[in-house]
Image (cartoon, rainbow, N blue to C red):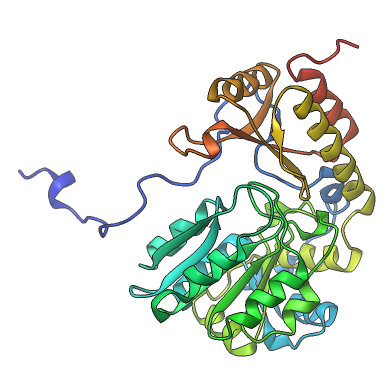
Length: 358
């Protein structure tokens, strides 16, 4: 009998070799500061919200949320798409606008699923290093316009994982310089930033704005994201998505959250924490990027310093984000989510190597 492992169905060539996962296999960890989840104070406001029987029985309808988002941002209903988190919308964008012979361009490092989505779409991946300072706009424009190939340009601000920011005027200038390019502005962390470029970007026909309820609203468990842009672009995303991508209870809670708004006190707490955490990490010899999201990104001189910090925190039940050792830039970096909670933040600071025992 033939071995089914070699003669059975096989996936196509070129698939990623590892799934995107988070390290939740350690019962010792009870403070997860590795995934940039929003403040728990936001989510607690909706924990006891009722769920109607009809919302469980019927297939979901996202029109009420789309109408509310359209009214909030001053666009038409046909200019809004709802997805299973912002990441699923990024996947739809790649499937709708990328293919073999087309190019995905973005600053690097970036959200690790983005290259996967581009790879699965068969696109060429074109990265422009952005490790600190201002966005390398000239290099991005050159890579985007290279040989006239159809390209989708992804720009995330504040960027993940570095936290670096692209100003609204610069985003608008880039999009205006690339009228034939779809410019995707991923604003997942915008509630924590000083400025919100959404209104300026929505005035441009070649820009697609992607946002989420996962971060500033603290509702990552709902898996609700949304994209806004020209009606024909949104139509392409819609036909590339599942018929009912978001469950009805999630849609109802997202609508309630939109009407209520993010918890301003929790957002303010995160902003205070990120400045204090940046200061503590600098005191310990880390180079810290100016924090603008709900996390702090820092780099050490040696990989061993990163490993020691992560190990010390894990011993105290705290998980932070480290990166693969084969990435030249990220191997010496850590990313730590600010919890937006006084008790959790005190625990984090007390667990840092060299912290006062007070």
